[in-house]
Length: 354
Image 1 (cartoon, rainbow, N blue to C red):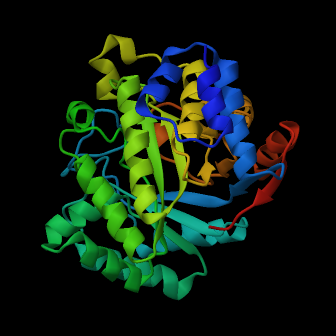
Image 2: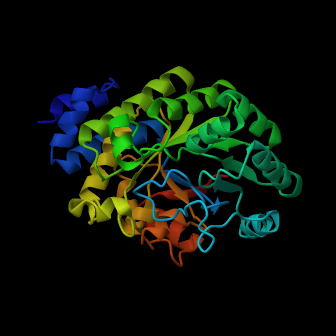
Image 3: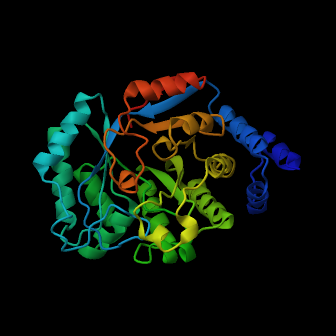
């Protein structure tokens, strides 16, 4: 039934929204995976899977958005739970990352009204003046908030942060880039156009960024496809996205799951692999598709390498947000676990540094 779509894939023809819906409505997981693997091998003909050693550092957990899917944040004024890292604490984490062979830190946090743009400039300069590390920092949501708090345009915020040491921007906060969905799960968060607007401004000044998609909650397949297509359309214009990273909603300890009985179970491995493969087929102009072994575990991540993915993500020396939702796949893992998993899946592990 999917032969006509497979023919388009072989010919390098771009898939449409209707093609994507047909794929989502099909249970022929192996054929969908084969199509995605065809695209992956065409883009990356060498049997190589990349990974990075880095650390996810959450500089503060204070957040005004209070997203219903998040188990990590602390409300403003919650003195027992809330924190903001000092430079000394941040420095210790960075030095430990470097000592373990790390080359990058992913610095993200909540939307803390006590932190203005000067805080970020000072923090970035502290990092860059004291450590040789790539600074992959601040989701578009954070940049929109900093701009609002500071009375600046987002492009001016980005330029000031680059001057202070910002190297690239992570794709967090995208969730599903459909406002009807965002209004249900995170009504205080920036709009889809605002998220895309930050990425557009970043790409225009030469910054590279990633894009994520959190699925398996209240969205439908048409929303996932719309998300993929708007990322694809921006990439057509700018070429600034280096990777697309789909991952599944983790329901434990979240308000969203508590209020929706049908969301208390995690999205299945079948759904993850199908969505990952369709991501590779639809987001045809982004070079890399990254597995989410932190949410899926190593075994499903290995399978994902034949369903369109070419990057294993990070060793993730530290991770707080997903673990707050009860996911512990990364606990106790070493670099050897990652490289062995890649080798056992039939690929050569190659470390990347940014």
